[in-house]
Image (cartoon, rainbow, N blue to C red; front, side):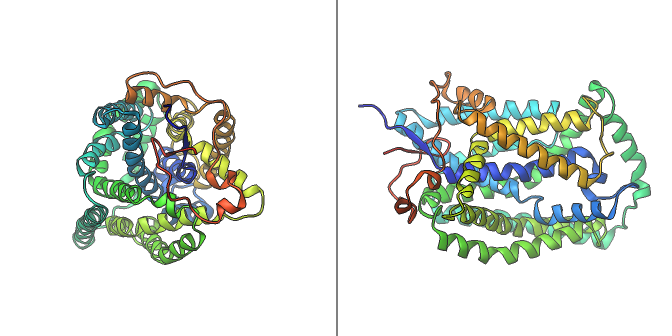
Length: 426
C-alpha cells in the first residue's frame, strides 16, 4: 500500500515567509554599520533616528523568536515523517544538525558573523534530549529559562548603570573608523574581520541561547498539542490571543527602544535586553495571530493570494535567508559596493522592502516549479542520506486558500503533520 501524499500546513509556511522580512530588516541594519542601527552618525537625519527607534521597538528580537518557535514545531513534524517512512529519527536528526552547523559556519565566516544557524544546530541536540517531556513540563522549562536570563541581564544592567559612566561617541569614534575601513577593504580584509568578530558573535549567541531554546520548547509544546492544526484558522481564538498579548509586547518594545536608541544612554542597554527577553514573545505572538487572522478573512479575494505568496517564500526560507546575507554582504562590504556605515537607516529600510518584494516574487515563481529551494534540497539530502525524490510540478496552497467556504468554517483536527510542516492529503 502506498504512503499518502503529504500536504504542508500552510499556516507555518506563511509565518516563515512573514518572519523573513523581520530577519532581513535587523540583519541589514547590523551589516550596514552601527550608525545605521542606532540612527546616529554625523549625516543622520531625524527620520533616520525615528526609523531606528521604531525598528528597535517593533522588530528587533521579535522575529528570531518566531523562527525559533517554528523550528521547534518542525521538530515534531520531522519525527512524525520519519515514523511514517519507517526510518529511525535520531540518525536523521543528527545528520540534519550536522548539515545545519556546517552551513552556518560557512555563512558566518564568508558573509555574516552574526549567524544563528550554528547555535540552532547545537540547541537542536538539547531539544532532542528534552523532546520526551510533556506539554506542561516543556512550557515550565521555557518560562524558567526566560526568567533566569532576564534576571541575569537585569542584574548586570543595573550594575552597569550604577558603576560606570556613559561612553561618548567621541571615545568610540577611532574603533568605529578602523572597523569601517576593514569592512570596506578587499575580500581578505572582510574575511579577517569576520574571523575576528566571530568569537564575540558566538559569545552573544551563547548568552541568548536560553531565549532561543525557550522558543524551541514553546514550538515543541505547540506541535505536541497540534496548535496550528486546531487553532490556525480559528478566528475568535486568533483575535483574543493577538489582543491579549499586544499591550505587553508594545510596552516592552518601548522600554527596549528607550534603553537602546534613546533617550537613555548606552549604560541602560542590558536593562532593555531584560525587557526584550520577557516581552518579545508577547509581541511576536500578537504579530503571528494578527497575520493569520488577516489571512483568514473571507474577502477580499486578494488576501488568499497574499497568503500563497508568503507561503511560497516560507517553503524556501533557508535559501532566502542565505540569499539576503549574500546580497547584503555585496552591498555593504568590500566584496562589492563597500557602503558599510555610509547609508542612512531609512535608505536601508527602503532597500529591504525592495529586496523582500523581489524575493516574494521569485519565491512564487520557483514554488510553481519545484518543492525545495537550493539550500533546502541540500539540507534534505544530508538529512535523508540520499538525494530527495522527484519533485512535484505543483505545490499545494495554504489550506485556507484552497478550502471551500464550508471547510473554512473550522479547523480540521484529524490531520497528521509530517516533515517540515506537512499533513497527509486525504
